[in-house]
Image (cartoon, rainbow, N blue to C red; front, top):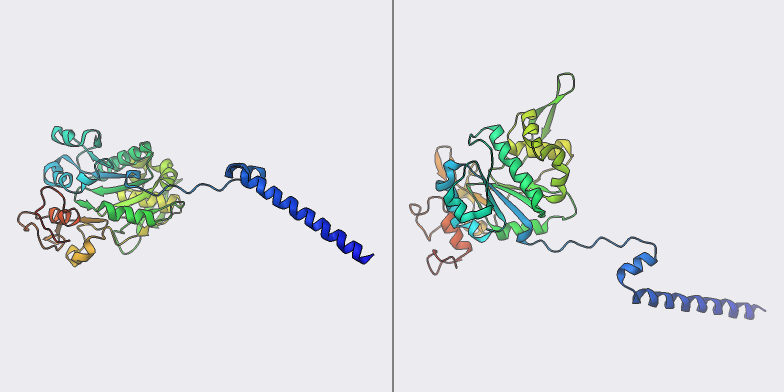
Length: 321
């Protein structure tokens, strides 16, 4: 009796096993989507394709006073390698620039003044143009920055694509404070980190879309006026105080307000942005030997460009990398 019972149980188990194998074979013969639907489950979200430079929107903020002295240098150097991704935002029409940039020159209705409203007006124009582009990353730089496109791409590829990302170099070594207006003529003291626009910063699309209630259209200028701070501070305020996000500090972004000579020649190839200018009364530039003299290339951007792209036609031949 016991033997018959064991044989019956074994037979039943074998039958169930065969049915399971047949079911698995059937499911595997279907498309992956059909398998998940048959099992009553939602298919996993497909991984986004690997980020390419064509997915990045690079906005350069400038003004007419610097079209010749600063912008033409950028067009001759790094912008020549990122022309399709780079858009220049200015306050005045310039036919010479229009011929070189075409639709990538964006003439805003913003003032040429270096004031909070004028700067925020241009940042708003940059932000709205990025949203309209449909691209995956927004990167802002100033007209005294050199952008190493390959270093930028390496950095962005290494960041989590499914999370909100705000990355750049903090302007201060502490959070900034602002008075946030409240009902009944009250104010609330808030503190937050922000990435200095003078070194450049990047925001992914996922985060940018969440910023629109305070940043799209005329809202950005309005938000900036409420906290009485300039455009780069306003970006940090929206992300940290309104959305609860956080700045991810990166040492790979640089402005002219730091000692650029401290960067070694080997480090230069890894930096995302570099700069030049007057700091504490002295010319502040990266330290780089040749191929152009400091008199020929006071910003050192042309020499850096030849180090990165020795095949550039105007670079001297046999430039050591």
